[in-house]
Image (tube, rainbow, N blue to C red; front, top):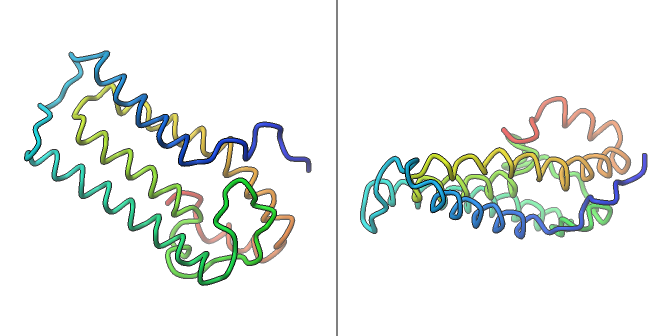
Length: 159
C-alpha cells in the first residue's frame, strides 16, 4: 500500500501545540462554558499540572524505550525504524508519546476550566490517527510483518 500525501508532514508536537492554542481560543470565545475560575494556586490548577506532568512522564517513558532499542524517535521518518519496541510502556499502549501529548492537553483543559476547550481533544486524536499513526502502522506492518500483527492484537493503539 502507498503512503498518503498528507501523512508524516506535520510534526506531532506542532499538532499538539496547535490544539493547545485552539483550546485557549475556544475557552476565550465561549466564556459561558467556564466551569471554574482560573486561579494560580487552585485545586484545578494543581490537578491540571499533575495530569500534564503524568503525560510528560508517559511520553518520556516511550522515548526512553526507543532510545534503549536504538531506533528512531523521528515521527516524520517511520521507515527508519530499526526495531519493533514492545517492552516497557509499550506493553500498555502502542503510542505512549502521543498519549503523553494528549494527557498534556487534558491537563491544559483542566487548567483552563472551560468545557468548550475540551471540544478540541477529540480533534487531536483524529488528527494524530489520520496524519501520523495510520501511516506509522502501515510502515511497521510492512517492516515487521507477523511480529507487528501479534503486537497490535494484544496492545491497543491509545490505551
